[in-house]
Image (cartoon, rainbow, N blue to C red; front, top):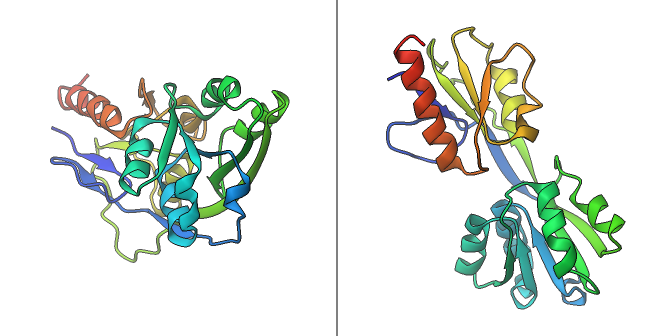
Amino acid sequence: MNDIYLLNDMHVSGIKNIPLLGIRFLPRQIDILKYDALVFTSKNAVYALDSFNPKWKSVPCFVIAQKTANVLEQLGGNVAFIGNSGHGNDFASELIPVLKNKRVLYLRAKKVVSNLVSLLKEAHINVDEAIIYETACNKIKHLEVPKPGSVIIFSSPSTIECFFENFSWESSYKAVAIGQTTAQYLPTYVPYVVSKTTSIEDCIALAKEEAMALNNGK
């Protein structure tokens, strides 16, 4: 089967890794106890907040998906709500009825692709936001160049940016995007398919289908 690449350090049997992205926490002073609800759309935001403000664990948390909830629970947090959509804008719609009359804090990355905060504010939700981490391209001198016919999984716009900073796109490659928002950041000449969910596992399953098709010459 043709090679499949994840552009992070998540080890999965049979899948190759190119750890392009690094995470840097951005500690800041936050009066966390003045909020009735904390909103997370990434497990990295949970790890970042936990690194500098232990008081967050007493505040109800509203998270985009089960995997983020799992990390939060492992750290001793209080999960009040888990979204179903997996997409930031759709998650905002899910949050509106459960955040009425609450003072809300959205903990996020420096770069985000959804309009979650503006959508909540349009619905008259009292929401603040705090940037507590950022992603950046790792400076790696020697990176393995994906072989012709490889399937590349892009899990965020940042992975796309870092990939094209380091590699040229071979016409025989195929891209798998974790969602439509991420897919929009791919160059127009890149052939891609989009995962049905924002799950890395589903992206890998789709990538295996694509790799098998390429292997069979389809």
